[in-house]
Image (cartoon, rainbow, N blue to C red; front, side, top):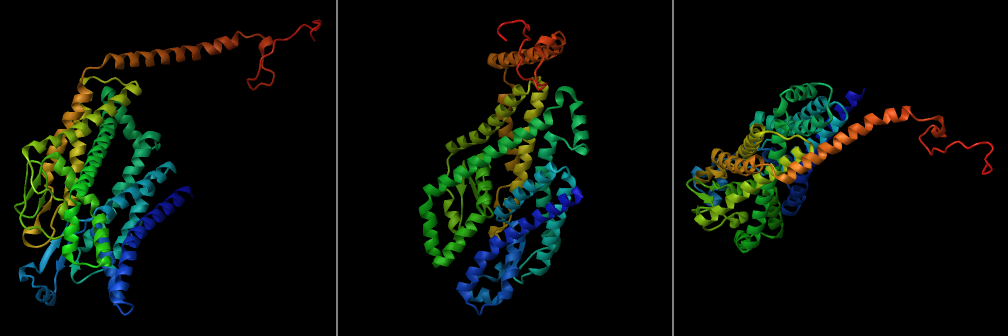
Length: 454
């Protein structure tokens, strides 16, 4: 019964995650629909638009087809009538990922992490299938297979990641424990996988925080350009609010672009364009307000920003090394080099996945290429993190570190010796010092019956 309850709760979590994501889209679109078209609007188009945008937010590309009458009214060239939009607003994907990780962790604490993860993923896939079947738009179509597989895959990765993080520490009495036992049998190399994952998490969080700070700094420095593009768009208050909400949905995407800029390769905003610390080459870009944050030029001296990923790698190496010292696990140069390499490989893998999700097509013609390039971003970030992590992990052990290890070892030996001596001491106790209540209370020596103090 407990396993069935865990599965039901995991499915309920998945339903909540999907409902919240859809409601975040549906609520402002309903307000927009009411204010723009009134109560006589075609409400039948509201749900298909909501479902399509929800799929788009989970990385599903949109095949856009602009009607001929719209092309004529707006004066758009006929060759721009069909294009693919694949640079996704990753805020929805990040929300689903984090919510799924929370659900997976709860299932792990309940003792059924695999069942809970699969049940939640199955429920999310069913909801994604329903959304895909009922939200087809004529102007923006999605692949039915991708509309089901990609949201479900995002939820599965989050749920399994959150569950394994808990189970790896607490155990599950099954698959993870067997894997743990196999890795522990590697001797000095046993702590390497867990330490590499932990270090990669520190490195990725550090680079992400630095990239978010870079976006904030550019917003402060070039906020005027963004306001000018808002004014050039000639939208009313409602339109400005909707554009701002769209920008917030694309904020994680912009952070990935900023991370690629900090790593060195930069990103593109069209075919033949480049935005990197070494220089900026831009032609005509769309009048999207957020693109006003793009730097107008660069300098070879700005390549000093690549020290940020190196610093993130150094921070991850320091965190891992401190944890090893605290656990009393001094490793040789070989395992420590393996940890540094693992941190770099995992960081590069995360960068590659992020580049795939945050890159693609922004529109027709020259806008068919946008975002960071996968291979350069992954290689650059992995290499820089490797340098920083290796510096901290492979440096000679400081005398304070050795002293701390000796102190920890001495405390452990003294504790073991005191525990081993306690049973013998108890065996030699006389009845005069027996506890009064059997609960380890005060011990009062027995008095002589003839003692006048009685």
